[in-house]
Structure formats: C-alpha cells, structure tokens
Length: 156
Image 1 (cartoon, rainbow, N blue to C red):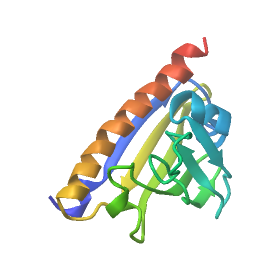
Image 2: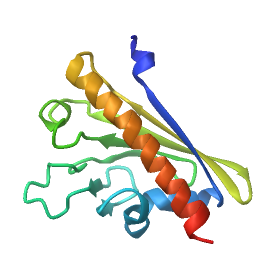
Image 3: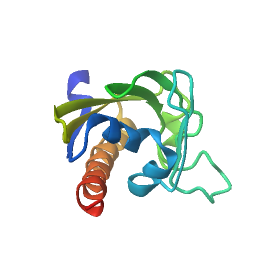
Image 4: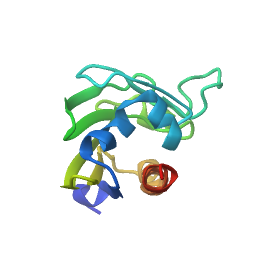
C-alpha cells in the first residue's frame, strides 16, 4: 500500500446550507450533538481544536485532541486541523510531528444541501499505524452517519 492508499476520505450530504454545515464543526454545542462529549474549538488559524470523548478522565490526553490546532480556515468552505489518536494510539500517534491532519471541505449542492468531504492524512508505515488508520476509517464513517442523522432527521 502506498501513501495515497492510506488517505482516509469520507463524505456526507447534509440537508442545510454550507454555513449551517460548517457550524456543526465549529460550534462547541453542535459538536457535542454528533461527535464528542466536550468541545473547545476556536475556529481561527492557531486556535484550539480540542475534542474530548472522555471529558471526566483525569488524563485528558486519553481519547482527545488536546493540543490540536486549526492550521487553516476559510469559512464556510474548508478548514484544516491537526489530529491525535485515542488512548490506545497515543503512544505512537501523539508524540510525532507532524501529527495526522484532517481537512474538511464544504460543497454547496444547492441552497438547502451541502456535500461535506473529510480527508485524513499523515499515516505512517507500520502495523500500529495501519491499525490506527483502520480504526479511523470506521470512526469517521460512523461519525458522519451520526452527523447526517442529527442534521437531516433530528432537526425536522
């Protein structure tokens, strides 16, 4: 498998405009509806993109993106952030530079529908990294299904 094969790409179609779709990745209260238990996001270059799946864990480096930053943003078209691994992956994923990288792109289909594409890159070459990549293939697919459910069905 070459590096291009390691890139994770996931899509979702949301029944909302791109500004609303973008808000589900930017606003802390909306992130907790579909992706995480707690969010601390400052959607500006250099701002925090910290999500916590186990916010009561005394070790905040477990199951979080603690320390991750927004690297680029052009609202409501795209943003790019650093990404960390979970508790099982942190010993190899979270102490290497550059961290893995997530880009989310927003494509208006029409005034009431938006296609979102997530691209997760930066995977290294060994069995631990391959296991982590496979974990995130499934995690992103599940998260985007949840996002579609929250936006497309729960809102109506």
